[in-house]
Image (tube, rainbow, N blue to C red; front, side):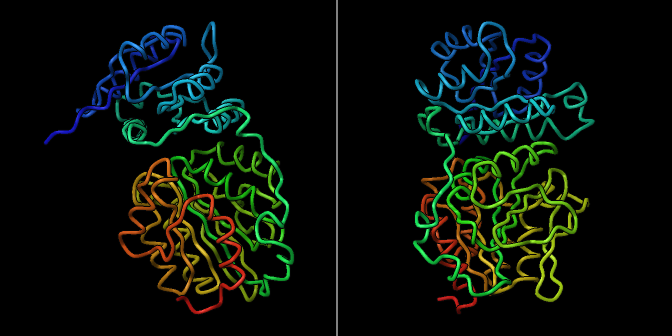
Length: 361
């Protein structure tokens, strides 16, 4: 039986962009563009009349900007929203703020090359819109995104620093759609004594640097976009840069990361599988891995590789995922030792890392 088409409303003040997005999305037989609006006021009326499954939303529009509209929408009538972003520094920052406010995902503004197939952007736009149609969205208020620095006792009680008896422990995290907010929920709860963390979040170039900077401002640990050769240190998290793979390397008791180009893996660069596979080989039983919300299957095989190597492994549960794709794949292939809600993952990472050399039960 053929499933219903995904009904999309395009909100953008540029007539050319509305036409381009309509052409891209309409090229997929499972998407129907039900309407377009040049500003949020028209969009409000069309949402009521057309009841779309997904909205694509530009930021810069007359009468009301996209961020203000998104905030009002997620407070009063939450629904899946995919942002259309510019690749400027300001565009990166605004897009990340939109994700904090409840947008499901984003994609860079397409060009004629996207439509003509010169780039692979059209397939990505289509995939993100279709995934958004199945995303779990919740009512959001701006007050919910105010970052707070955690106390050590909030996570694992006193004496956390002494709990980490070894210096060669690693925590590896992988995420895609919805992952920025999942990572925020985890990283802001980790104390400064946490073992070194390596992260892959599917994101284009530029956005990873902005995201790392935003996390660094609100976490007890230090967070930065990784550079080739960076050391993996306790109390620090390294985020793979957009369009580059990141792999763990070990020399003696010291871990570093290799940041490099190369072929896409599972359609992604950076790829969670690339990171997890390297952690399995280099850290083995001294690692803890967690796969978080995201579409597709990237990371499932790598997490299984980690578990087979003796690492402790976690998958985020369906109820707390924005998109239950990557965790589902990991669970189904037997890669996840534990399945749990996002709210439990920070404390569990600390618990497992403190005994990462123990035999898995």
